[in-house]
Image (cartoon, rainbow, N blue to C red; front, side):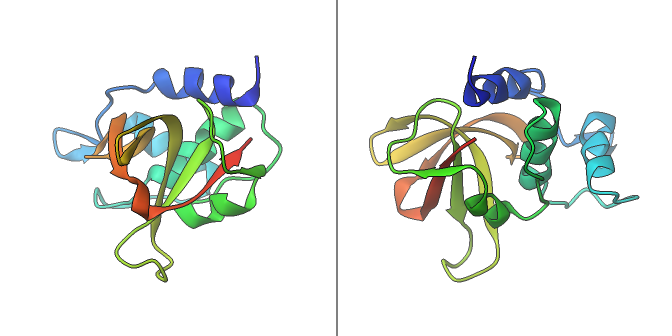
Length: 140
């Protein structure tokens, strides 16, 4: 089994969990903070990067994750032909901003890409994103 397949299987363990429970940060999501030594945060935290970082740590991948989605443009190998389990990194708000989103490539659909990720409508799920916002694909 390759790292991408391992990543998908790990992510599916979290599928459907919500960011909050009764208005408080979900303890399963809060565990991801431990990886980055963050003590506490509010429920408006953008946690897609830490979700991927946690998954990479869980599969014993040897490159560190980050809270910052665009960090993932620098790990693994660049690919222009993503397959199931590759990372896909997007820009958010502005292509030149530091802000972004990262998730796991599932497939292409029309003018979009289906991504398994965290903090997608405040849950772990599969969501479709516009291909025009893709910054890159990385194979771990």
